[in-house]
Image (cartoon, rainbow, N blue to C red):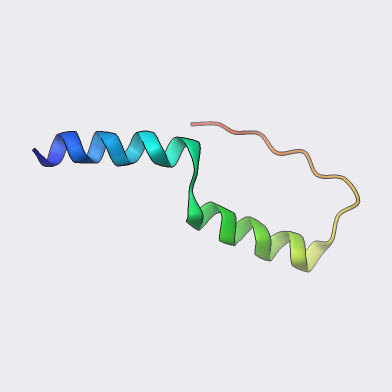
Length: 42
């Protein structure tokens, strides 16, 4: 059962990660780039 749950949560995290959003926001607030290119990779 846990294996199925892990697979589902992993699938969701490949689409949206609140942890990644928070870390990216910290970098952008600190650096303030004019242009930003972000790749989504898994």
